[in-house]
Length: 531
Image (cartoon, rainbow, N blue to C red; front, side):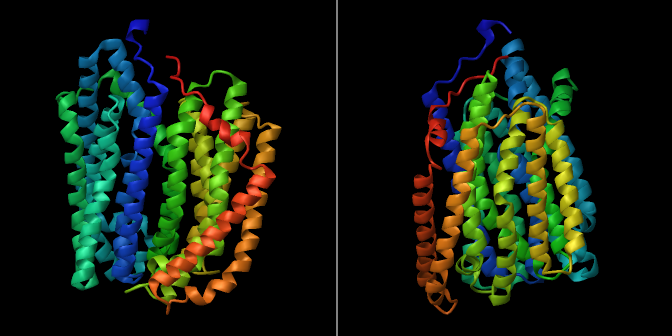
């Protein structure tokens, strides 16, 4: 690559602005999605209709999380920019047209087959429905209504990656928020109307596919300013490279979602548990998504530019410490306050006391795995930056295997939703330990004394927070009772969370958990990797 063909390095101010735009849009989408799930819980509860609807929703959610939220950027964007720099803009557009055409054809075949074999698709997501023919039939019907979403949103994700490659981030980042806003509007209408839950779920499933169409339309609008993509099924060398490197990276990055699919399989062995697991997972995903945005948009971009081993070790240590500084108190709160959190967020309408207890048990089990899920995300990106997805892929397969073995071994010990969540947490633990071991073995990370001391200080501060919450919770239990007004319960829960956060913040400050190790992240240089 000649110097003239190297794209200009983005300024730090622009990188900060783009990171802020993507992060804010992702947080907005997560909050709208969380509000959507709160309303689904109130509309459907955790009965057979909710089990069928939420099992069918697992496939669109898997596609959206893996592909629709930037997952295609890693394999597509570097290759697109390389073609553009070496062969010119016309060649890059031709490659983008080839990628979109091949992906569209593959998706058409997949959706057509899935429509024909929808019951088997459902059994692949929730095998326990085999003994519940009515729930299986309902889930297959909802799956058929949702399948067009998979086609539309995946095509939109590839075109969004093209926009990102051209430095246009805003529309691509805001598109998922638009989809959640559409579903929220439908849910509010259904809650006001008060129709049968089965009909409401049918309308929601159909509107999900319509939201995928809105997603694609929103992406196409700014894409026209870049240039028209010409469809082509030519199997070029660039397409071969995209398939060869991108497939392994996507599969490795989707390990966490495959673990959650295994958890759903385990939960489907008991009526009502699929919905309970889903609601608990949504609360669990909220803090994990916030931290993942921070890791992916700022810290890991800087990691890609680090040239010396010392710089790399320090930055990886700071990334891990920053993630644990956020994940440790969140996991503590989710574990100790699971029942009041679930009660305040979901207990209303069709969602009753038994649903609250089942969902809270699953949330407590998920809380154990939160720090390990974040650590695995940070460790895996070290290999993705180097385009070496083999070891993260092995760790992901091991995690899925552990989830399946642990879940089915423990099934019957407690409620199926709780066992499914516990199996996922054990899988995240194994995945994080394996990736850490690979990094240490390969010499890609040598944690220094400052990193270890900071992490220990974070864990001690979280333990002091747990002690404070254990003292405060009994005092506020009367105000958290379901008989109290929703605003009163929300205020009591907010007081508990604020009290715990104050104790954690004060303890962390005294112990030095938030010292220069974390603050120096602001000074991490963001440089473009060498070609």
